[in-house]
Image (cartoon, rainbow, N blue to C red; front, side):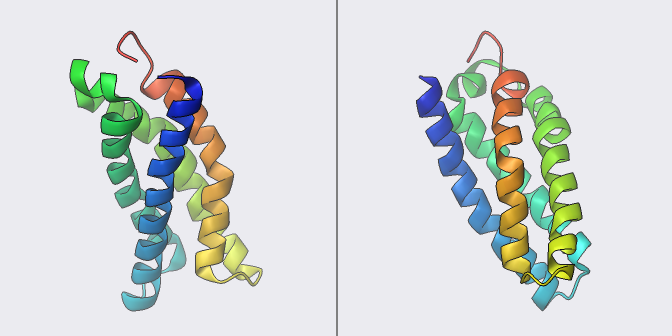
Length: 131
C-alpha cells in the first residue's frame, strides 16, 4: 500500500473517530454533566480503542494478520493516546474558556493532534516487517 493510500485510510478512520469523539464528549459533558476535562478524556479513550481496531484492520492490515495486537495497542496508547489525551484534555477546556462551544473546541484539539498521530502510527506503532 502506498503512503498516500495509507494516509487516506488513516484520515477516513480519523473522520469516523472525530464523529465518535465529538458525540461522546457532548454526551458526557451535557447529558452526564461531567467536567469538561473528564468528558474529553473519556471520549478520547473510547475513541482511541475504536480507532486502534480500525487502523489495525483497515489502515495497517498486514499488522493485524501477522503480529499480536497487545504490543501495538500499548504503543498506540503511549503514542497516539498520549498526544490525543494530553492535547484534548488541555486544549478543549482552554478553548471553551476562551468562548468556543465544546464541540468546536474539541474539533480544534483533534485537528491539532492528527498530524503527530499519523507520524507516530506510521513510524513507531504499526511499523515493522509486516507493514
